[in-house]
Figure (spheres, helix red, strand yellow):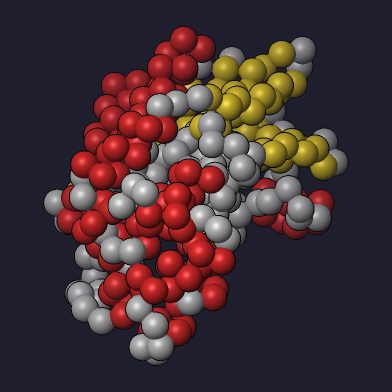
Length: 288
């Protein structure tokens, strides 16, 4: 038996298409999508349509991620449509509009899934962890934290995405795996990440696979779609994430969100400030 686990596509169509082409060659028995197929990128409608085709025609199992939840929240009657908070989340509103304001596609996506191999060897998959869509697993975490986030009864393999940082570690006989991100890795390696599980010699053999894709086409999609001009200045940080394979949005929320909401600086000024402090602004600006 072979299982493929992938997610965090974030509207990166060339990366998703490339990952699918790889899986069509590898031919897994089951594929699990760990969520965050949409948002944080330029081609959410196309990526969602491709995911739905695989779900409907090949039985891929979709999990809901925090970015699907963010898009769902844009449909709430009290979701802001102006002001600094709206500007901070304009890129998600842009995705919501690109999806034609229809969030029903996510209603049946699961919070987690369990797959049973031979001899009851359980594989549990969540977007981030059993604690929810935002409590992820990182390589620096202690064994105790990993065990808690993998849930009970303890599986043979616990796999998740969300943090965009690939790793695998065995704790007390359980393999904890972060499958990385198809669309926006954060470990300094711009190649897509996914995990392949193969049942061999009475246990699950886990391999994290990295795949080259046409990043230049993704950047052209950002320009062509209006993402860099219409989704607000946080789209510039997302472009930096693509270019450098490093997280940017988390640091922006930590360092600038309160000041933006207080009217002390604009979103655009705060984004430029953050990128200039890292020496990344000039490279990003070249694509705007």
